[in-house]
Length: 363
Image (cartoon, rainbow, N blue to C red; front, side, top):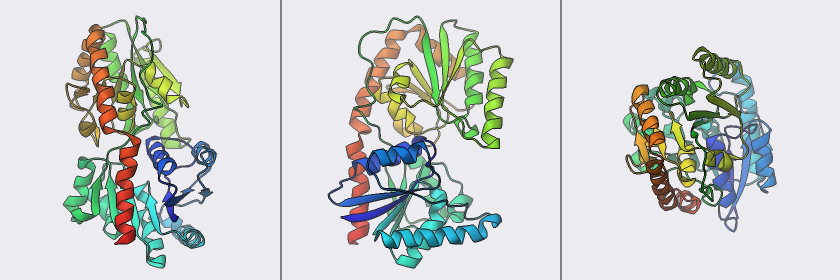
């Protein structure tokens, strides 16, 4: 078997990136590949991997570029090299591009190929800063997220675009007919500026003036950092300011995401990510903005709608339109499920990644 070292963004919580990494390492062909995941901290994701019989190591990897991390980063890099050597790793794949300098260091020491997974929208400065030119291969989750790489001059032969996947057996439409008078609209993700929950509250405010039977779910927890806690407070304050406490439900982190998706009638995403595939697989229409992989995952007018990110009023009007025509909403959800089955299966995703591994390992 070929040992592969994976670097995870997080071990203490499970976000979209962690889900995608879990899909990969738990479904990769274990007759050929032996995954070992390195998490920078311990917690629910690391524990999930252990329960799935995926060897997992906790190794703190401090930010490479921060001056205060200068000594700690070289110590961590040395430990990472030793770990890769001990396990005879033949390839390293990071699920978080910010760890690219660590990959470069290990690659330089052991002369093994390295892959960086791009899950966010990068700036040209970040492409340069995080040493993408030193990566042997780069996997982007959308054509849009690959553009900054190309614009900076990264060889297109190094770049593969592979959309996120979803467990179609876990995320399924609810059986039976629901008779709720409420039309439930949700946003999913960690409560943080990038996910734009404050903008979601502003949209909910506009919807609330037009329709009394629409309620909103903000699904997701908050990382225990000053920045994230401050943003969470701002979201709650905005809800109170608009007197929407009875209309907006904060669910916190959900460990039963298939059920959480089934409770919705519509998903709204103002960022991007695997939640789009999860909602579609559950038979829900999705309204998104042209960010990251969103425009490549939603078929506009068929499985949902792509709306301008600055147009909260248009998004609000589309939510009201769907709530007033539940038959149309259900029909779009059915088409979304069919599209998910054709596009977002785990098996297809893993096969594409394995093809990249084969080329690197035999090239």
